[in-house]
Amino acid sequence: MNNTFLEKKADVIIIGGGPVGLVTALKLTLSGISVIVIEISDKPYAEPRASTFHPPTLDLLDQLGISSKLIENGRKSKKWQFSFFNSENKVVFDLGILSNDTNHPYRLQCEQINLIKIASTILLKKNSESISYNTRAITISENTQSVSVKAMKGEENITFSGKWLVGADGANSMARKHLNVKFEGKTYPSSSVSINTTFPFHDYINNLYGVNYFWSEDWSFSMFRTKSFWRVGYSPQKNLSDKEALNDKNIQDRLSKIVQIENRFGIQSAVIYRIHKRIVKSFRKGRVILAGDSAHLNSPSGGFGMNGGIHDAFNLCDKLIRIFNGSSDSLLDLYSRQRKYAAVSDIQETSDQNYKKHREKNHKKRLEALNELKKIKENKEEYLKYLRKTSLISSLKDASRIK
Image 1 (cartoon, rainbow, N blue to C red):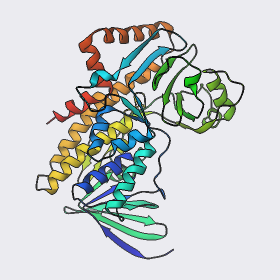
Image 2: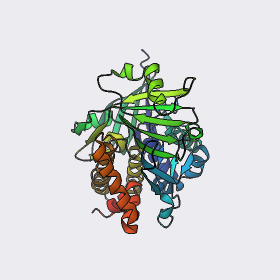
Image 3: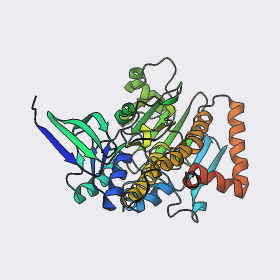
Image 4: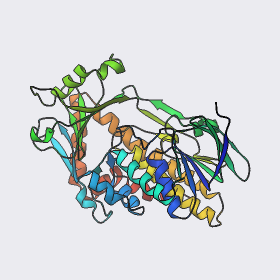
């Protein structure tokens, strides 16, 4: 092993080069605060999970000059539906009525890798040393003035030092484990399969929108249309192993329940993952701050995970910028209170309701749930309130009021 020891310094060290880490890094960099992002993969990388950008997230990303580039790489979905498959019994929601609340009254369906590529490109142009790829964080140490991360880049030993450390390193966060805080909550009984396919479902199924939640006779599934793919999500049949659930025959059989074709469906990617509802007691301890999945996890139903993490990043950056300009670091405790409130009261609660509603198998209860959504749509105030809630507009506003 090479015993070379290097030391690199920046104002803020960020572990994790996913959407949350890179948005944090770019926001701080554009504000004149130096950053280094420690990323374990050797290039911009993202699993094919998140693909929904909600209106207020796009409003925030406008500040970084990113939204317009995402829109070029994505597909706007102004309407979305909850429906009994192959039935006229449905409710369709129109985000266009949010035009007074946002500059982006639609969902943007765009794979998160696009955000990662765009943000990392801008960041590296600003400072070619701001991302350290192929680097594994090993240990964290801190004192009253600074925090350090010992890491390995290939076979090189590197110490990264800064005033603050942001853990944006996901569900298995090394930063959270360093803090030795409990990640309290639960794991849902059903996992989730996510398929990206090039098959043009829109040519075969009438009245498809960019975002669709379907109940069918013996299962439920979601369909999201990005610029390049249809993404189909569903819970695998019980008693199947992950390997069996991702078996090509099983995937082809599942998709054939949506549309029957003579040939095989072209599969671009297929992943399966556990679904969790977890949160830490505090998002901040000493000089280490957690954001995104390292601090809170939720069901993907509704597309809140990445969006909530990006909202964490902007809230945190606003606080850090004020601290570097002379404010008290107690602002980081306010960040924790505000974003924990958002995670529990809005993101986890709503995604949990979505999870249960979409996986309901009892026909009578499905009808009751759909009729409740229809009643909401019939009442103008309730309709507006519902769309603000499910697009996270009210989440941002409610969290900002927490003191």
